[in-house]
Image (cartoon, rainbow, N blue to C red):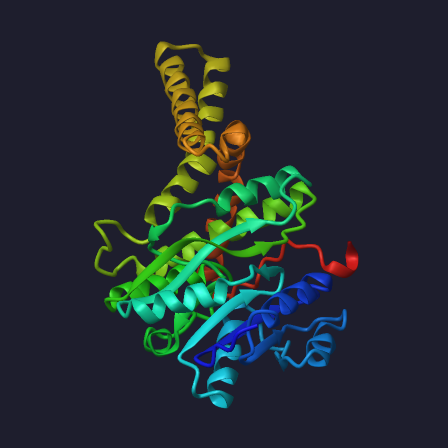
Length: 349
């Protein structure tokens, strides 16, 4: 175990059970510095366990709507208030195990590259073979090393630049990491993904309904991110999150609706125009599927599952558009969106 006095660790979680125990153990085995666990109303003794192993615990007020952004910000505030010497923070979700040596690797990179505000590594799934949904998430984690636009929930940040950028947006129920990283890049900072193991995630996704809810959450995040930044100057020639929002609306609502309407019209009155529209719609769907398939097949590690992945990406447009519409409906009604939970609590498994 080595001492990393310049860095503290913030863990967030709720009812993670054994997953949290693995998480904290993996951190303490490589880090002697401060560790803060932010608990969002666990009923499985998570907070008590964290205290028993010497971790500082912050219990969130559950009367205030919980978001992961709020949990991380609260943990950082606690860390900075009590350990002001810390210049860096490692965020990690309570369902993740930290790979041995990662903190040292990530910290050394930031210490040697002053123009970078954040760094992440490779995240993998603990049991990808357990269910097709775990396998899909494993494939989602795949990414090339190098400079990136955003880091995920597990990453190391420079605390001063993190705070200057405004921290995580606590109103966001998902997508807060990419939003933060956008603001960091707008301030001139850079972000890096190292080709190094970082964390092992335990999704424990067993049911189709869980996958659906997670995809709804993604759609909500796309819409919220786009809506917040639609009037910003373009980043790298693109409007933030406009493409995924349009993709969800096109393949999850517009195109399916057109195909159904055209089919009904053909049933009532066959015509060449109707047949052309139906053919064009089917070709667009197949083209989307093949584009995802061939892009995924480029990776040797994921190619055996390319058909599965492409199929679920296409199917995922339906829950995604549900999330997009959910966001805009809540906005129109003046309602605050609540976190969309898809995981099964550890005590239920």
